[in-house]
Length: 435
Image (tube, rainbow, N blue to C red; front, side):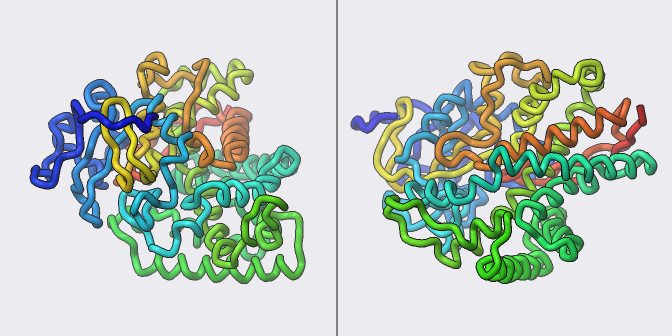
């Protein structure tokens, strides 16, 4: 990154006010990255291969976005890594923009600076420091045993049935179970909590392509449930993540104000969604890859030492969050392209994880891949602080299946959600063949 006086862009540059900004650049071959249904066949790898080759810093016109603004698209690994590590690219807003750091569409104006994923450092890091002990090594060691017991029962039950929807019944199950344990959700509330998270992961909405009245109502129910649980843990703390959030204090000397009630409540809701959706999607996408590459499954069954590298490849392959957005807070330049303060810049993690300059044969699913410096959890200060938990969940599912399952066979065609923000296997009918 550079703060030198920018040079004019040579390709993919931002059009001036008199140009036909609504026309898609030729390199996209008609693929509007904001047109969600276009993602219903999976991630458009061929589009991003062209971008990496011909227009690694591309200005995308407004397209289907609601705010009438275009945005920059970064597609190469090195550029995305550097931008993610550069504080000039804000998750909160800035550069003349009030808000809208993280998404293509601007968000509710009160949330940037309140939700942890829409904060910048130092407050963002100070809040992460409060929450991180709940997903540290000691906490995960306790969680490991509980998750294995749960998955053992799940796999045994599903083996008896044979045919089932993997994404809905197994992929979602471990995420909901893990986040319920981490947040300290009372066991009598687990069925209702599972119902809420199933809706809030958006699968009903994604069938119809827009938020439903039901999911919006459940969102508010979960928000108020979180507020009540936070109040209960404030009065009577326990050894769970909600208690850390309810009673957490910013580190002395950080200069940060106390955590507000709105920050706590939005953080609770965000952790519920992030802790369930990403897990469901990564596990489903990773197991789908193993079902489609049975020789890789056989290799895992023959050599369990491949499990750690298989987990990393599943993460690279699925990349549950295809992109994040940042806002440039000052004028700068990426390669030979001028970026202005206030411009939206999107970091396409899935494209980075398929970059031919970093990964050999990137479109090949390879559980032996080494090295595998993927950025499925992001990069820099905003990388996911639940990365160790995500790896644990993948490992538990994989090993639980390896213990009992000889073959995983697709029993129908998987279907994907039309979403550019989440990599979602909506339906994945499978048949498990017992060992």
